[in-house]
Structures are given as C-alpha cells and as structure tokens.
Image (tube, rainbow over all chains, first blue to last red; front, side, top):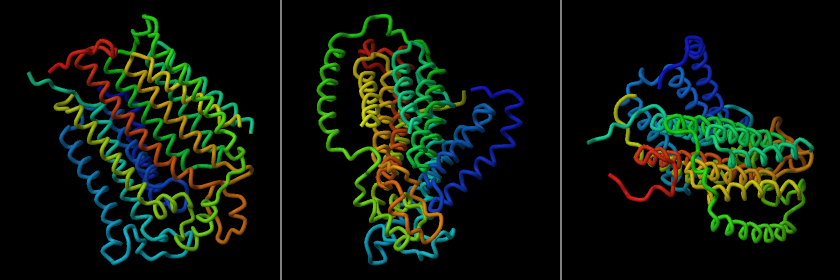
Length: 144
Length: 173
Length: 115
C-alpha cells in the first residue's frame, strides 16, 4: 500500500515514539492503575501499525518484519510459561507467587504480576503486528 | 442512569444498520459505532480496564476490516436476490423459543444494581493482604485465576499461527 | 430488567446475520456482534448502584467492600475481548483467501475446491 501525504508523515515521525512509550507505561503500571498486559500490548502494536500506514509498505523489508515478530512473540510466550513453571521447580505449586511482595502502591510490588504483564505485553504486541502485516501490507505471489 | 439506556439503544440500532445495509464499508463503520458505544458503557458501569482494552481492540478491528475490504470489492451483490426462506423461518422459530426461555430465566437474575458478590467480596478483602496489588482485577486475572490467562495467551498464539498459515505471503506489494 | 434484555436482542441480530446472510463479510460482522453482546451482558451483571471501580487508591480503605463493583465479571470479559479479536482476524483471513480464489464473497457460488 502507498504511504500518505507529507503532513501525516511529519506528524507520525514525531508521535510514534510517544505512543510506544505510553504503551510501555500502561504495561508496567498494570498492578496499580487500570490497564495491564493486554491493553499495553495492543497499544504497542498500534504504534508500529501507525508507522506502516503512514509510510507505506514499500519501505518495509518483508523478511525482517516477519522474523522479528516471530522471535518476540515466542520470547513473550516462553517467558510467561517459565515464570509459571518456576514455582513448580521451587517445590510449591504451579503459578506460585515466589517474588517478594513489597509495600502496596509501590512500583516494585505484588510478586510475579509485573513480570507476567511484561511477558504478555511483548507477546500480544508482536502477534497483532504480524497479523496486520499478513492481512494488509503484503502480497501473495501465486506459484504457477 | 439515563445515559446507559440511551447508549444501549444506540448500540442496538447501529447493529441493525450494520447487518442490513448494502455497502460493506458502511457496515464496517457501523460496527465501529457499536464498539465505541460499548466502551463508553464499560466506563459508566465502573470498569476502566475493560474500556481501555475495548477501545484499542475496536480500532484494530475496524482497521483490519477496512484493509480487507479495500483489497476486494465493497459492494454486496447478494442482496439483489430475496433472502432464503428456510433459514429465516427457522431463525424466527428459534428466536421465539430463546426469548421465552430467557425471560423465564431472567427472574432468577439479581436485580440490576445489587449483585450477589459472594466470591467477589472475598477477593476484595484479600487482595491487599495476600497479593499487595492495588488493582483488584489484575490480581484476579494473574494471581487467583492465572490458568485462564495462560489459556488466553495460547488461543491468541494459535490464531496468529492460523492467520500466517492461511495467508502465506511472499514478496512486496 | 430492561438493561439485561437489550444485549440479548443484539445477540439475536448477530445470530440472524450469521445464519441467513450469504455474504462472508456479513457473517463475520454477525459473529462480532454476538461477541459484543455477550461481553456487554457480563459487564452489566456486576454493576452496583453508586459503585466505583475496584482499584485501591489509598491503603487502608475500609469502605471497599461496600463501594466496589464486582471484579470477577471484569476479569472474565477482559479475556473474552482479546480472544474475540483473534477469532475475527482468522475469519477475515479466510474471507480474503476465498475472494482471491473465486473473485466473489457469495457462499452459494463457492462449490468446487480449486488449486
């Protein structure tokens, strides 16, 4: 798909970084304010989709987009699974909350919840970006 | 709560418009109206977590719908022939049966505005003492009911794999 | 009882679109409407009159049990919204493939398996 006009390109260059930062903020503060892993992950995916929509997909190198999306999605999924399995290795049950729980309303508190939020945020963001690339930005070449 | 009723009626009206209209781009936009009014309903009911997720998911859904429609046609030609008789009659019979059962089940529901909250009160009492998380919904989905979140991560992973397999794409556009 | 009946009517509209329409995009729209209706019904069940969102802003908060709305339906709906997005994306991928092979969205014209 082609890109958009010059005004959209200039504004996107200024704004895309802030949208990504906002998504990271919502992921990290998931245990204090509304939001959490899923909302932040979708906002992170939206910042990348904004870049592709504004600049067109001719500037994208296909292999790079798919390769990095798959790598990050697998990293997110495996991190979530190993955090859950770690409680089993320690001798307690699955999903045991083993990290120290600090004071409430602090940023580093409530055990494994921030770690799980980060893992889910990476996974959802990369996965939705891969879905968008496959549906909207690439072309199928028929093998005859 | 007059705003709640107005938004519910708007949601229902936009749903009917998006199903019956002939132009497919207009149906996608009407679906966007349904999604955004649902997000405002979530805010009025006291669920800001759900409102954030619903807004961003709705934006992505409308973008995906429009992208798919722009790569193919956006006029619906099947409305030129009359609707098939057998599915419509079956649907009307099923709808009457369903509404009869639902209205009789509605008497067992708690009154709107007074939920039962037997398990919810236990979670609220223990969220600060055991988990030390200020957001009770995050404590519920990641500590008390972590299995459901694991299942959901698996379903999302499967759907991404499914989309990438169905649309094997090579090359640039 | 009125706020519980309107999402069910939306559910029936979505079911009609899935059953009696012949265009694949209309079937996908019906599916999405069914998802939204069920999520709305769940979120309306947990509402408490004069309630506030279940987030502690100061610790301790002794009126919490009296003022918070129910957190359990919110946890269930949060999962359901994201799963709905995944399912919609898969359905649209199938629709796009069907269009690329048969040049139409009509389900009554798709007969032979090609290719």
